[in-house]
Image 1 (spheres, rainbow, N blue to C red):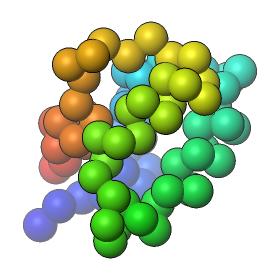
Image 2 (cartoon, helix red, strand yellow):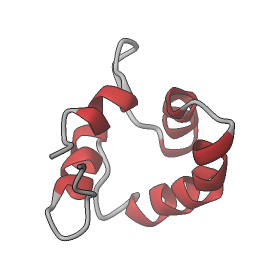
Image 3 (cartoon, rainbow, N blue to C red):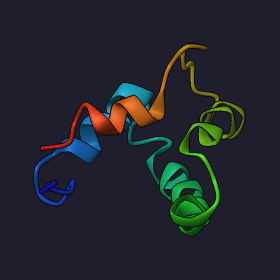
Length: 75
């Protein structure tokens, strides 16, 4: 059984790890929602990292794994 991110602060924790703040939070959510359906069907979550870097100017390390960021926060 996996607990989702609802009400536990894990989603915000992941965003902070990526460098999301009050300034770019809305843009991040827009990008996330744009690709959410594809993530459930055909897109690898790791393909979002370069999009976040390009669109939001984030400084995410080259070896960062968004998938690991999610898995590390599962309960």
